[in-house]
Image (cartoon, rainbow, N blue to C red; front, side, top):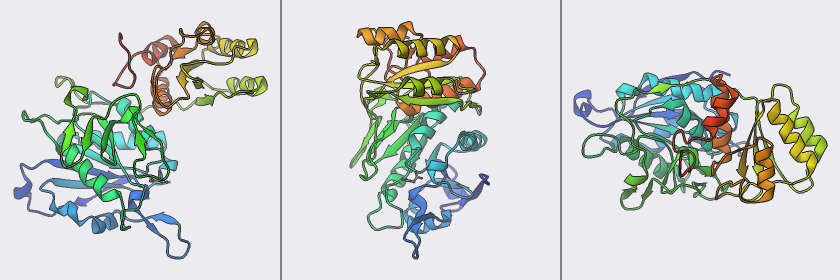
Length: 365
Ligand code: ASP
């Protein structure tokens, strides 16, 4: 599949002089519902060319910003997103970093939280806004949520503090009036416009008549550190969700898959799992073989505390590490990222237990 993005054009065609000192935003269109149209014969939603997006949002031309765009060719339904495309996004941002104040990524909602989490690790020392958004209804439809999401995301990507520094120098998801830290976000609704939540970290901004930024919650970058792009991932990982009645043969087969390097274990409540001896033995043998097992909760909200109940303590003794209050999307992409960088098992375990880019809540790090 050709994933080459190409630079389309300057969107708001005003003279370069007029826009010389204006905020500048690079809009990267990867695909997703926001840029889809209904096939008149089948009724199915299909991707269309980015030019149509401009046709449907003529408001973009009214921004007094310099807006340029990249388009993935062909646009991707986000179910087809892969680490390869995350790397492409990082490459585009890195190569255009000095030319723009901020970046907006239009992305399908289905895997947006994975992409946002991955980018937060890949763009080390990020000091400019990277705002992902999309929509539940295609932008060409009357009741679309896409216009509002897109326009506000652009405004946030260009927003500056009085001293000229960006207000939100982070990878975020903006959706339906809320700006959320990307690696804290999960898609929670396949129907409503209010499709994303950040259960374990408050929104970075709320949007009504005004955009109200929560400045004390927003990451402060170190201006002395240059952006360091990362491109490598190792996808030998799996998510294992526990359920009452889970079978030994299945757990055994999964943990013996050739090449498996890490497991995100979705446990019950505050990090609890069955106490059956076979289960603990399977996990212990796996960690002894070098497989990293990270414990996160199946609950949407809250954190794992393995020392709290006896069942959790057995997991600790089996070598399972805590994922704290990580989302599944974040735990998985963080593991893929760390494994991809060829770090030692010990180093990966240490970094999984550290907050690298605001992805987990730890009182002492
Ligand atoms: N299937 C679409 C996607 O994730 C859904 C959306 O954009 O909301 O690409």
